[in-house]
Length: 210
Image (cartoon, rainbow, N blue to C red):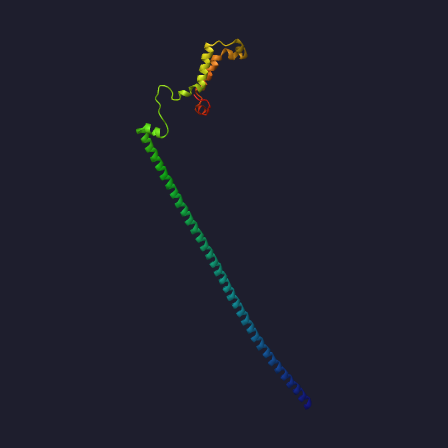
């Protein structure tokens, strides 16, 4: 009986030692797990905070870069606008100068015209002579030597010829009836029309001479 109790006590002591070891291991495991969790929490928090800081820094850099790019673009646009305004001012100044020159030229021309009008009103004959015009005051026309070339004089000569010289009947039969009846009238009409034809150029080019 006593040996059996001893065996039970030994087994109980052994179990207690196992339990104590298990508790020790359990405590060690709990401490390790707690420390690991703390490390995980710290690592997660640190990583999150670092990520937030990096993201904020990147966002700030991107925002600053965009602001700088926008500022540079605005400066470039302002420079272009200033250049265009300068060119526009230059064109406006050139246009104003051109208008002023035209006005001055128009004033000079008008002044010259007024002076010429005044000179013509005071001395018309010298002005006309300087322009190539001459005044002829003779009793007959100035170019009477070329009068034999005029169409009207030829027609008047034919009228005198028809009125004073008998026309052969054979010649009258060749002409149409309406022409035979109004031959003198037709000739006079041609002479009248000839008075209105400018023959000055033709007279100069004719080979005949008076």
